Image 1: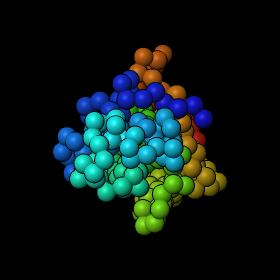
Image 2: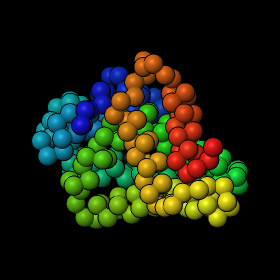
Image 3: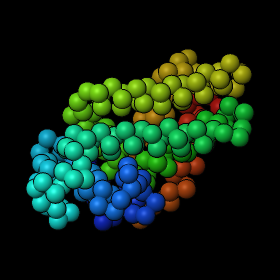
Length: 211
């Protein structure tokens, strides 16, 4: 799988990217360094010394800011899912129309993956590296996120607006479309973020049988 470009040229680490839990500048820098290293090298091949070197913090001083490499991975992955769930709730608020709700949810999903490519890459690749209870916490959030999309599709079917054999399969397809954006999207590409987001909204509606 191709890797997204890192720190200097991705929106995931520019202002407006997800803040570090706890918020102090040093914690934010440590999280950003861990995220970039996990993307470049993988979780297993990254050490706490690597992370410390990236932010100019040595040995025991690093542990004043973070308890372990595992805690950093959990912070990144749980934070990613919490951000996606919050964006979904905001997107679907304010309208009862099934097609508009699905469009808005899809647009929020795609926009997040366009802007936070490193988080998406690490989140998809490193689920195997999570230990309990973090693994269960992330998987529960993933299940809730898929269920939120599935319920949108089910509501559209019940209203006679959507025509699809499996709401679950449709939700998986829509989610996969959005996640793929994190791999190939570039700010200097042929299409703007807004153009891509809108077209993916069209794709989602097409998948559920809206003309």
